[in-house]
Image (tube, rainbow, N blue to C red):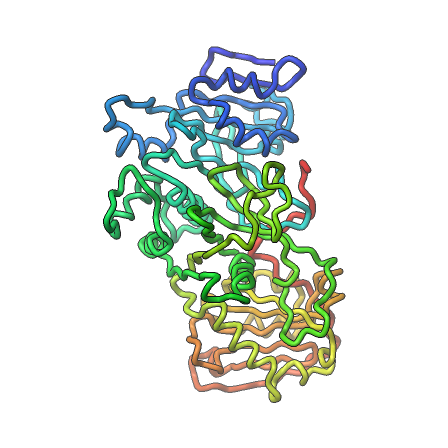
Amino acid sequence: MIKGENTVFPLLVFDEHDDWNSLLKLGKPMLDRRGLNRLQPVLDRACKAVVLERHYIDKDYRDTFSQFHSKRFVTPEARCIRLHFFDCPVEETNITEVHDSVVKGYLGYAVIRPTYPNCLGRTLLSHRLRLERRAHVSVCREKVCLLGCQLEVEGFPFISKDGDATVCAESALWMLFRYYSNCYSVYSEIRPFEIANYANHHAIGHRVFPSSGLYSWQLAEAMRLHGFAPIIYSRQQYKETFEHLLYTYIESGLPLLVTVKSHVFAAFGHWSDYTKPFPDKAAEPVYSSNFNEALIVNDDNWYPYQILRRHCQSPSGGNDSRYDWSQIEEFIVPLPEKAFLSAENAQSLIESLLEGDKRGLDTSPRLRNRIIVRRLFLTSSRAFKTLLRTRGMGNPLAERTYRQLPMPHFIWVCEFAEWDEYRQNKKILGEVVWDATRNEFEPDGWIVLHYPEKMIVDVGSAQNKDPNIQELKLLDFEPYSLFNSNLNTLEGALYA
């Protein structure tokens, strides 16, 4: 059913007479089959209605239009169409009167711009549309105004390249930067053409516009210009630890850029399989990364929320990416500027502490000779302390000590747990908290070493004085929940 076909806000409700082809007709000439094919696989199972918003002025496309497209002899339109998706049939009165079904059923929006060969512009769709059970993803929220109704959508930003001012490099950077500007006020919002202009600072031997792409070091330089402290990791350099480090940074809630041959896209989540057997007679410490089976990515050449698996299963369709892990050559991490200690250095220091004779895992009777799994991640002390009450920390004294202990803005945390308790109940038995503003040569950079029976605290360093180690005995300890603030956890996709 189509209502108001010739108005500014036509409404399409899917039924036996009208389907996605009807949307294609309503959206012409801007919406083409190629653009629809980017949206339909994600929305097909959930979407029941679409509202078209014609004559929409999109801030991202308008920036590119005024700076680039308007300089062409044959110029495209300056305005766009914005599509709003709902998981229930809607009426205009439902929207203007702000019915609960409309607010709760909002699936997000997609801007359709008049560019060829890719018309799909700024897009934010609900992350619950296609993700698998137990996926863990970084998401941001955005408020949307439709006919005076305030709606909200939660997901990860997506945009396709326009083929002129932006290609995959600029598109991937835009997704990353828009996520951070939506989540954190410290990062300003940036437009696609502004991102492309970053290349002006390091364009060597080729023109900036039309864009021909960026090298990894140019992507990293764009991140630096935008206020990050980026690090490039290559498979050739890190070999066996490459995939573990990739997982560790995503587990830290840091969306990053992943490069394959001649292409780059954003990675912002993962999916793990804890039914896998624990490594038999593991000589090295076993981390949660051992059980990771897939990454969640936004690839501008395809559609949002693709699953990039360890081994590619269906490269020609479905929800899977056409790539697998073996094809990942590099990844670029946009570290916050106050996080000075990298993942590999933090892990090396923490392992030296946990394997030591003086304060290592074997000094805890509860942990000695047990099958232990570790989980490493970066987080803010604010986020860590915010969840103290809900997690319980295993003991009231441990929770109270954490609350009162001064901490740096960013901390590295290494949790440890008995394997069965971890995979079945997501419970842990302790953690090491390490100062992320220390350097790799400071073995005394830990702040807290928390075991089931005791809590060892460097009170001196926490107060910016000489080390002063104090040990607190813990009674009536119970396993407690792992830290889960970095990523949004999906117990099951709503529309699978």
